[in-house]
Length: 174
Image (cartoon, rainbow, N blue to C red; front, side, top):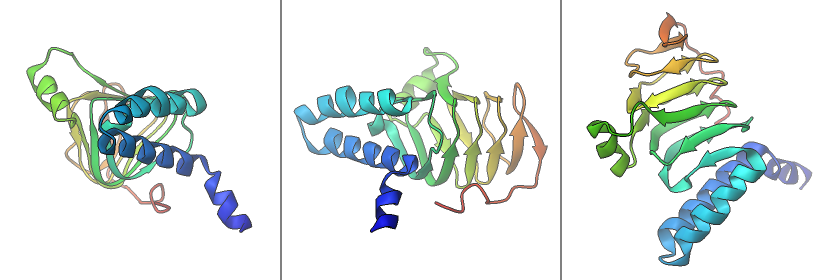
């Protein structure tokens, strides 16, 4: 009982539960669900955890946000069939709001396509539309403004490949 009670109060679990409830409300309740999802639950996630998002645009199989302050996921659409770790201060945004490719992908809610075993470290900025392949670690304070197609560790402004040695330590718990 004590272990189960403690697991409920892990921040990661609370964020994922909030996102799931918000998505359920948005997609399953036709009239009031969208209002409750976007104006109440998503705003509560912002007030309590500091995550600015629209839950209905997040489609990540296994998401880990253990230190949630200052994260902007927005409503552009983030997709991943795998495991993704997002650290504090990460921002997802657009290069330009008038880009035809961005507008097309934004309407499909798939501006950001992430692979399996992706770690985005603190205060990184991801400007889409982009695709990030499997087994990628983006170091802290990096600017990702182009797609990443090779596994490895990336960092810098703009992002460059630093190493090919990627392990799964960050995503093993998911």
